[in-house]
Length: 192
Image (cartoon, rainbow, N blue to C red; front, side, top):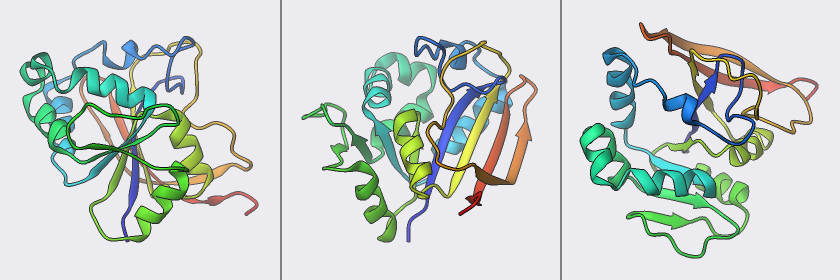
């Protein structure tokens, strides 16, 4: 059985995106060498990447470029070589190598994929998809990078849960630049 992990950046005041969908705050600082090494190491694992449409379009516009290869060569190589699954109701074709559309209901498709064999599934960004996967009980781990910035409002990572979701801290790591990585494992929905 495959696992499904969510990897996200959130602001110190708990937002996934700013009020207008802006995420530049998450990438405004380049990070310490230790944090950059963590990101590079995190990208080395054998996994299938999963995106919603908005995140896919953002990633596909950057990672295959010469600028990405210059700025983050190891991460760019992995992002370009990885199998990528894209949940979208509007896209009909994908231009990024090794990317394919999830047919039909993305939650149902990922539930089926989780039951099979293969590398872990890792969702990057994709707040709407993450909310649906958390609500469906399909997420095995939330790895959150809490960025040392408060943005004063925006969109939380998970929206629309019918009941609170209890989490168990599975690991944490603080970096000299102020980034803090928290690994959370869902326990159960309260009242479930």
